Image (cartoon, rainbow, N blue to C red; front, top):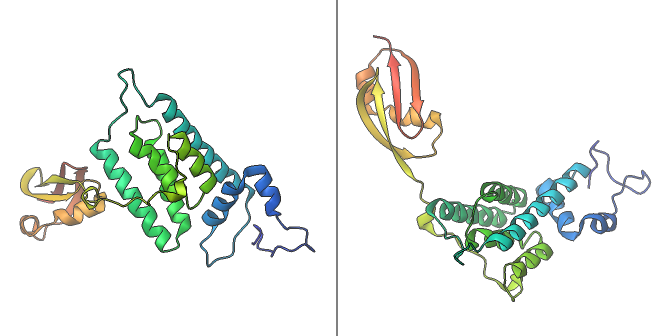
Length: 237
């Protein structure tokens, strides 16, 4: 480990962090998450009390989310929420991200993907699949908490025996949008582009051969973009 100022930890310098103290205060799962999230395996770890607190808050959020779902998952008609298309895309893209990062030993980015996933599902009425994905993907990082959450969701078997989820390719395909391309307000072309494409990508894709022919050598003054709908190139007459 390395402390924040870059000095190597040693007993003589009195800057050693005792893992037993850390585990006693926060638990083994928090300690493990901090070590995995703070730095890639090939780099020295910088000690940060703030980082440990952050991991503790994240795990507490996960616990509250799953616990809240267990208490409210069944509505007055006795049915759980069903997965919709947006939720399925989120689930399977998260599975792919976490799986790929674990295989590459990029544990910090795998945990970042789980944090993003929790941010996306918190406050929503989620399906069982969406909720149970959290303990399943957290299990390699926080096995004690994951097993408790798995049992909380009604499962008798240990989560360590549960098959790792696999991403369904059909939910990994990006949604496409038809974008109208205008030049000075007149329709010149249409393009199909991923719905969540950044504006720079939309502008580049919209400069099709048809549109370039219309623009010619005239300078483009500006491009007005309405995400997922249209882009209008304003050129000098």
